[in-house]
Image 1 (tube, rainbow, N blue to C red):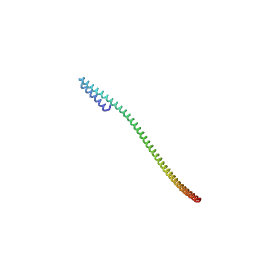
Image 2: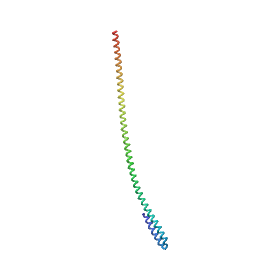
Image 3: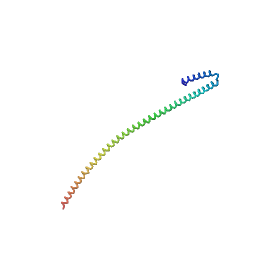
Image 4: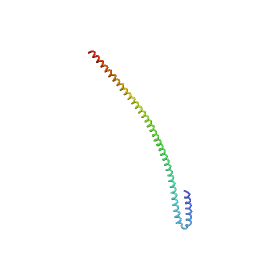
Length: 152
């Protein structure tokens, strides 16, 4: 009980005693008022107990809710950390893949240019061989004609 409730209770008892003393000749009325006062007092005590029980349940519920909130915050923090780690890992993988892709593209370009140079060199050699062969064939044909002319 709070201080105000205690003071109200004491004043109620004093008032009840005064009423009983004044109405001593009216015992039925005084006893009814006394019973009514006792009933109200019992109801008040019952409601006070119920309020205390409700407050205790509310405190317990608040503690449980606080624990739940703490757990959710921990889980949220863990999920956030995992998400950040995943982003960092993904970013680093993307960076490595990008570097490897660039290196591979450079190597492929270099190999392509080397191959193109080799093909051009091969074509040049082939053309030289054609010219040499053509010249040789022409020379041989000329020699054969000369030999034929000589024998004719």
